[in-house]
Image (cartoon, rainbow, N blue to C red; front, side, top):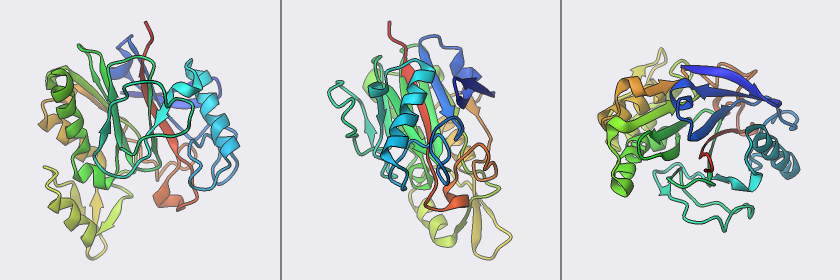
Length: 267
């Protein structure tokens, strides 16, 4: 179950499944609690869409202070809508503003705050509760078609010998099947990628389909051995809730991005 909480000025969501682990901290931030003005009001963490660099930097500092980590510890993927994972190996890039091209991180080292930016795409956080491994995943429709969440489980297995039954997952706010209408071309591309799921239902409009990214990512995790009761979903549509969430589908290119993060507490 997800709960809305407030830390400082930041309104965010927390998964009760992940909150049980005292060795980590996590949050799915809303758009509330920052300094940016419309159309990026207010807790926008991306400058690519037109918000001022100073506002974005200040918003990241507000988040860091609210959750008790140093701002340079936050690393953000230069997201490319693929299925590439990056495993941070050192802290040299911190504070440089230069981030790797990927759509997911994973680590078993403290000191890294793994961050994913979203404004409709699905943020997925994974935790190996036994081996203390964490992952942050950005799953848009292309990433979901490439089964990036399932790949996260497999990468944990490959890198550190994780087992599906030891992994817990939180799937945060994203565009829901109520609002995500796509065309036949998108559906064909998705199916051709052989993601292992078919998350489409016919739309009321001809040759259009309603895409359920949330259930697709959940099912992919289950197919990799993650028990259903260890997968938490926010089931909140970012497109429907304009007061609390940014949405590319609703507002177009000039809208902000939320921060979704996970970190291992320092010993």
